[in-house]
Picture 1: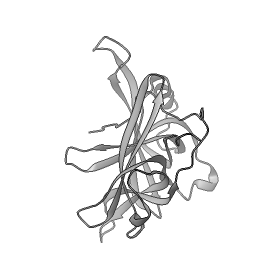
Picture 2 (picture 1 turned 120 degrees about the vertical axis):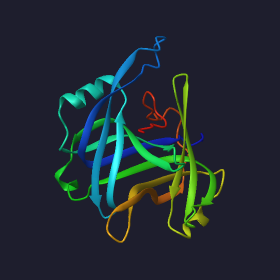
Picture 3 (picture 1 turned 180 degrees about the vertical axis):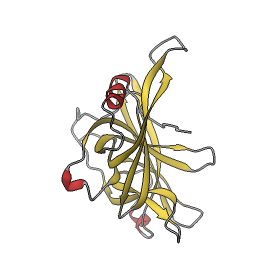
Length: 221
């Protein structure tokens, strides 16, 4: 038996609010001025989890150009890629996605728009937010070629369920972005909430683990 493959997957069923061209440094080039086209996305997922606005990016140049050429703004799509978090300048952890594939949203999902994640990673800490809610700190790792990718996530969980997690153990978790609304219905924050979890099972050697070019924190501000 081998160690569990650390896995990072993110899927969004959402309406494309905006898709804008951006430029980013070409990490493979020695020319610091060389830029590659990428695409910034804003998606709307209004469902039982509240009014969730999702931010994402298509970082690979050819897919980014194709997405922009298809004029997907206003369409409702199913987009697949990896889930990520980064620390905002105000200190808050923000969630976003790096997309690799997309298609028109299947009709069966049009009334259930959502932003989800599936992660396999090590529990590094169990802490509590300023509001007293439990937070699981999970680190995922994978390797592609000579590059190693590591992401650390702060994931909310329903009160009382943190007792089922043990530091140092590797878990498979499934969850969704949930919008927190005030009394007037305005979304005040978005939190990634774990909905299903369990200890990860060992997998055979050679099982592919998706890891796109540039996987990791994707700052948007």
